[in-house]
Image 1 (cartoon, rainbow, N blue to C red):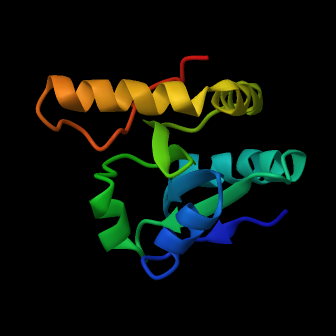
Image 2: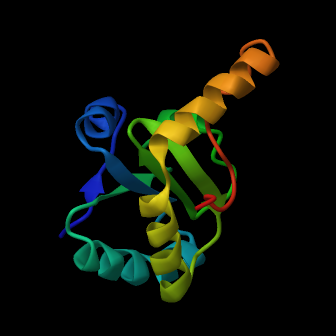
Length: 136
């Protein structure tokens, strides 16, 4: 499956219409981004049921800024409109495959309950974005 190019015009619709979206924030001048691209494309072919998207941080600076992207490549995973993973760095194929498996295994009801508890505990807190590896 080909990756989807995300822009500020189609971002919200893509996230709201798809239960599982991987997003690669990248730029054409970024060597690690270019090295990660074939790994990401291969994963998109191995997981045709998932949406693999890319955000060109040069062309979509407003979108990259909204997610506070400061290092590229940055991989983000959004399930059921909740960002469950965001981390900079190019992943090797095995690590990306493992990460997708962990993200698939997450109980999203449990994730939403943790977010709600966290927001009640700190008076509003984060928008639910977890940074790091998903806990299976």
